[in-house]
Structures are given as structure tokens and as C-alpha cells.
Image (cartoon, rainbow, N blue to C red):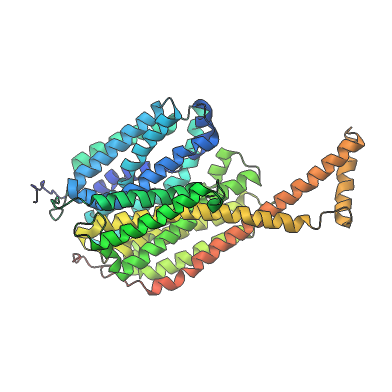
Length: 520
């Protein structure tokens, strides 16, 4: 039975966009801002770093479980009410995370933070898509995309600065002023549109339970698999079976039930299905490469953590400058053509990174990162606009929930795949390079003699010099093997982007690139 609908005054859409961007930026920032603080958190709470990683995992699991339910929750409780509750819950949980005195307490509050934060992205995206007329949705998604693309890159920089200069607790306290501003602006400027009616149908308890079990198990497998050597670990293998079975039964149940918690029939729309798949791949490569670059900078080029975060800033700068341009010109071009340019540009930048060596300087890192950021703007904005174009307004909340869920799952898969591929290729290259490192190889003998002579010249006895020379040559082998592994991984990601080009032919051109006709 529909409830009384609040008055629906016409608010400037850019005010609405600012209101929801506060919440979105805050939530996305928290997916990466804690990463660099883990050693400090572990030391402060008397835990190991491995135990402290559950601070990240618990947030991601709760976030993944709530994301696909957001559309149903918004219809059941009312979108504005749900958005206010999510912002308030996230802000309060942030404060409690900063106050936590034990690791279990911190993990519990991170679960609350992830659950409330999971609703923020799809709700804010749905609100913005509805606040702007169809011809201006490119600009809206460009503005919203700044938070989605730039926030994860700023996270390590902000987290490193706050942890080094204040305390790891300020990584959570920084959310308080942003959250309060979002709560006030949401209350004043965001209203439920007339077609959003609170549902009075049945509650799909089985769907919720299966979703929580399946998606939660999948997220843990993706996050912890590499640490436990994947399916060599019994508990990872068991969780993998639970994830596959839970998601399969969930899909069957949702298709057959009368009041599903997630409307999977939206995937019958060809453009939407292709767009969601492309967004999954975009999350895969974005989060995977975002993990690889700082590891490369710190382990092979010797950058401190904060400097590595700053060195990644050009990607955010490229997105920041290109997002408004793409949003402005999108109405004049077929979004699929812009997507094609973005895919080729992103593939080129990863190919450029695969051409680096151990002598790479700052500018060798700067330009590929900058171009990649600009390419991501040409991917994210038209992809979101084209994917959501055929979706009726009444289904927008449900569609954005699945869209964001698959981006996050793609990101988790990208991180897991990148770390595993990197580790395996490093092992392979170490073995291949070590074959030629023996006393009978002339180059090896020259290297060993040179190191031994240098050690003896600095006062080392001959026996120590010999052992140090062997250690030096082994360190050189490991560094070169690691460099070759990074080259292989970047090149593989470039190929993944190029393989996505044929999917653009599946998508249809949006019906509303310029006109303002309402969606039906």
C-alpha cells in the first residue's frame, strides 16, 4: 500500500549531485584509505598484520552483501529514508571504528560500516540519474565518476599522511565532518520522486539469506585466496563450494519467486547486460593495476609509501581533467565510440607500463598514469550513461545496485588475479634466470669477482666477501625476475582491455543523447 509521498520540490540538480557526492566519496575512499594503516593498527591493538587484514575483508564482505539489496531496501523503506540511514550509520560506524580498543571490536564496527556504506553508491547514482534530464546525464555521471575513480587513488595518500602525522584513528575520524555535511544536505535537498512507492509485498528472506551466504563467501575467497594458496587450503576450497552453490541457488530462487529481493530480469536488457559485464572488467583492471603500481614503485624502485601514493596522483589528475570534458561532449558522440577510444587508450597505457625497466624515472611513470586516468574517464562516463539508458526509472535503484556490485566484485577478482599471476610469473622467471647463474658462466664469474673485490677493498675477509657476492647475485636475479613478472602482468591486463572491444557491438546507442524525452 503506498504511503503518503513527500512534496517533490524542484531542486537544482547540481545541489543534489553535491549532496550525494559527499557520501559517495566518503564511502569509496574508505575502501583503500585503511590499507597503509594496517601495520599501525596491528601494533596498536596487539595483533599480527595477517589478523589485521580482516579489517579490510570484513568491510568488503558486508559491502558486497548489501549492495545488490539496495534497490529493494530503498523501495521498502523509501529512498530518502534509506539514504539518510545509510549516511548516518556509516558516519557513526566511522566514529566507533576510531574509538575501538580491540581488534574484534574494530572488525565488528567495520562490518557495520561496510553494510551501511554498501547502500551509498547505488542510491547516490540512482538519485543523480533521476535528478538530471537525459541529455545531461553524461555531465552527472562525469561528476559522480570523479568520486568513484579519484577517491580510491587518494585513499593511500590520505591514509599514509594521517597515520604518519597523527594516528591511524584519524583515518576513520576524517569521515565525521563529511558525513555530517552529507546528512544535512540529504535532509534538505533530496526527496523521493512520485513514482517511488513504498512496497507492502512479502519479504524475500530466503533470497536475502542465500545472497549473504553466496556473495559473502565469494568475497572472502577472493580476498584471502592468495594468502592461503587458493584451493590448496581446505577452508578456501569449502568457501568456494559454498559461494558457487549459494549464488546458483539464489539465482534460481530469485527468478522463480514472486517478490524477489533482486530483480534479475533486468539482465534481459541486452545493453544493460553488456554494460554490466564491461563494468566488471573495468573494475578488474582498475583495481588490479591500482594495486600493482604502488607495489612496483616500493619494492623495485625504492619509493617510500607516501611517495608511491603521490606518484599515483597523475592518474587521478587525468580523470579529474577529462571527466568534465567527456560529460560535456558525450551528447554529441555515440557513447560506444567514446568507449572504444577509452579501451584502446587504457590498453596502450598498460602496454607502456609493461615497457618499463628498473631504471625507470618519475616521468616514465607519470605519463602512462596520466593517460590512463583520462582513458578511465572515457570509459566510466559513457559506460554508465549507455548502460542505464534503457532502464525504466522505477527499476533504476535495482539496476544501479547490480551495476555497482559487479564493479566491486570485478575489482576483488582483479586484485586476486593480479597478485596470483604476478607471484606465479615471478617464480617462473626466477627459475629461468637462475639456470644461467652458475660458476661456469663467464658473466656470472665476472660479476662475482667484481663484488668480491669490492668487499675485500672495504675490509671484508675473503670468506665473507664470497658469501656476500653470492647474496648480491641472488638479489639481482630476484629483482630482475620481479621486473619481468610486472611486465607480464601489465601486458596481460592490456590484452584484457582489447578483448572487450567486440562487446561494444552488443550495446545499443542510447535513445536520449540529446533529447529530453522521459524514459519509459
